[in-house]
Structure formats: C-alpha cells, structure tokens
Image (cartoon, rainbow, N blue to C red; front, side, top):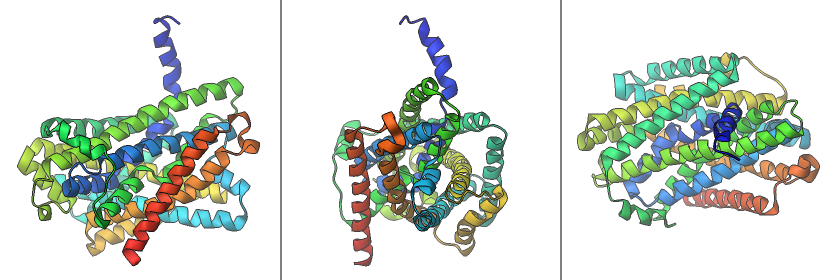
Length: 408
C-alpha cells in the first residue's frame, strides 16, 4: 500500500477513535495524583514498576471490555444482567455503586484541593463548584458523544502537557530510575501505595463504561464494520492508555526527583507537595501541577457520573435523572470536605476501595470474553484469557495481603 494511502486510512480511522480516550481520563484522575505523588515522595523511583505493570493490565482490561461491547452490542453490566441470576446481578450492582461513590470522592476532593491551591477557595464551596463544572461537561455528552470525546481529549492533552513540562524542569538521573522498574517492595506501607496505584490505574467503573461506549459504536454493525471497529479499538486503547501511562510515570518521576530528597513530613499531602514544588522548582512547576490536577478532577468527575449512569441502567434496566444521580454519589465527597477529613488521605484510601472493586468487574469480563457461545468467532485466545486470569489473581492476592496487614 502506497504512502499516499496513509492520510486516507487516518481519515477513516479517526472517527472510530474516542471511547478509550474517555476511559483513559479515569486513569489520570486525582486519585492517581495522590498515590503517585505519595509513592514518589516516600519511596523515590521504587514503585515505577507498579505504574508500568498497572498500565499494561489496564490496556488488556480495556481491550477486553471494548471487544465485549463491539461483539455483543451490549455493555458489561447488561451482559451480567442477561447471564447471571437476579440475586447475583443485584450484588454486583450494589458493589458497583459503592465503587462509584469512591470514584466521586477522589474526583471531587481532588478538584477542591486544586481550586484551593489556585484560588484559595474553601473546601466545601470548591467541591460544589467542581460538581457543577463536571455536570456541565456531561451535558455535552447528551448533545452528542463526539463533542464530549473531543473535549475529553483536549483535557487529557492539558494534563499530559503539564507533567511533561514538570518532568523537563525536574531533570533528574534517568539511569538511577532503572532500579525503579525492577519489581520490589519495602514493607506494608509500600504495599498499601502499590495497591492504591493499582486501584487508581485499573478502574472498575470504566470497565463498564468502555464496554458500553464500544457497544454504542457497534449498534447495527455488520461483519465488515465490526471488523473495522475492532481494529480501530486496538489502536484507540494503545494510544489513549499509552498517553495515560506516560502521565502516570511522569507524575511519579517528578515527585521522586523533587520531593523524595526533602524531609518526608513536608510532603504528606497534595497541598504540601504543591508548596514544595514551588520552593524547589519554581512557580511554573507548581502551577502546572495544580492546573493538571484541576483539569483532571473536572474531566474525571464527568466521566465518573457517566459511568454511574451506565452501571445503573445496565444492571437494573432503569435510568434516573443525572442531577439525582449526581447528588447520591456526591454526598460522601461533600461530607469528607465538610467535616475536615484530610483530603489527601481520603484520596489514597478511595483508590484502595477501587482496587477491591476490580475483581467484581474483571472476573465476569474474563468469563464472558472467553465464552464461545457469547462471542462466537471473536472469542479471545487461551493465551489472552490466561493473561487476564493472572491479572485478576494478582489483584485479588494483593488485596487479600493488604486486608491481612490492616486487620491481622
């Protein structure tokens, strides 16, 4: 095929991209800021390998979610409702709602922290502003999914630019970072952060969302279009999740380079990290960090609410107005802000809650995508299924170990 065909292929491909970019916002949400910044500040480059591993897992999981949607024409929650008993479906729905609340907690609290950093707005009013902005962004989706996707891509670009700038300003010894890509941990606190990074990277609510977005694209598709969608989806996942991975690596790298050498008591929270960035690298780095956090909070809050709608309609077959949905999932975040709970600690713990929700989405996903009666000729290979099983087993084992450390 000649090089002249490349622009033509790109023009055909671009309209098919987008769902993975919407999903990828959840992988660079304020929870990632909290866990990656804490990991870099406390352990330097040691947990870089966790970020890489989590991102590879995310690519596999999101590819399976999108493939299920394209092939079946249904989202994961809808397939669960079709395949499981009413009791199992209700149980999955309830835990998915808990995950949605943990997601909203991270996103609204993160936005509130950023608004305080930038403008000195108190926590509770800042949380309300974040909720309003996120709801306004979601209104774009009601007017056409392509508009929403384009805005989300733009916001992801802002976050990426902010951390690439910060990484450039931070400098650092790349050679020394190599050790961070060799798997190792250092005590229960590092395990807690590793699980938090995993929870902030492999996000259960966007497994449901991505499968639903892909299913919407595949509505009424014939075999030829389904094949094109599957090829485009692979590209979509690789590009979108690849960008999210670069952001997470840069996030941890900047914290490791600039904050790890400082006394640990000075960088226990995101506001403290913001002040430390200003002190050691200048106001430009601090501003880039705060702006990236703000954009991340706004974008991920809208995606989180969208995911909640998909979860409810998929598991129950019912929809409720976005405003009511927003109020229900927003309540825990506003309570945290109102009573003065340490926002950064709440962010990290919310990511641990998310990690516990992963198996409840991932195990049905693996089962369905390996079911030939459901997927037909598109059933995933044994190697892919085995890889997904290993991912699920690793996540469950980490969570079990964490529970033993906390309650044992």
